[in-house]
Image (tube, rainbow, N blue to C red; front, side, top):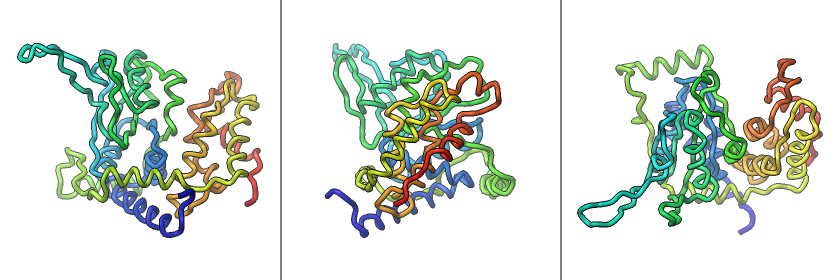
Length: 325
């Protein structure tokens, strides 16, 4: 099977719409954020969530895990967190007189790495093998992680004291960098009413979320996204956008080839969410900011002039002609 037929596309999209509806029971507003997290799941990839505290990042991950009965684990990254706290360690068991391996919280389906930039590089790097190879090495033994496996890391863009910026090598492991902004007034009022109505509001639970599918169904959805057709002209368009970041004077460092790959992987998920078995140039443009904003470095001159990565990328997308299909 090389492409999706109409029946398979309709079935996958219907299931994705059901998952989206469940998530929106607790995540009011933030529709683009919900879609982009689902796109990351479809691409079998990891996402970095950036936003100030209190915008529902943890709630979104817990809700997503419940929709497919997935295992969920949360690690609060702190300056004293050790790599063994993430991947596990071996301890000597006096009763059996042998070393026993205790697996860390990374052995799960959805791993929430909360405030990942608060841990030093040594601990951050403990996730690199897991994110790239979908395995960790404990005492010289490679241990595969359960499938599906997805890291959703959060970081606070405002507070910088006591943080360790993620190195480019690790940023590149995240398919998408998703920015979560404040909800508008209407959405905030609806959110407040939802949390506090006939409730103390102390616990932001996911009791209203229904489990629709199992982990194996997620793997089937990922395979469906992998079969979404990408026309050669659309692929060429994605490559042109990435190469343009290397030629733009506003960036001191442009995106590498992994940026082109990220655009195509994410665009396939975006197309499937829209009920299509093929990618359009609009899918590429739609996903370009979250796929590329963390892969480029703004130049000092552009930063002094008040430009941001998103503003420069938006301008760049307008300058690269899209193919007509």
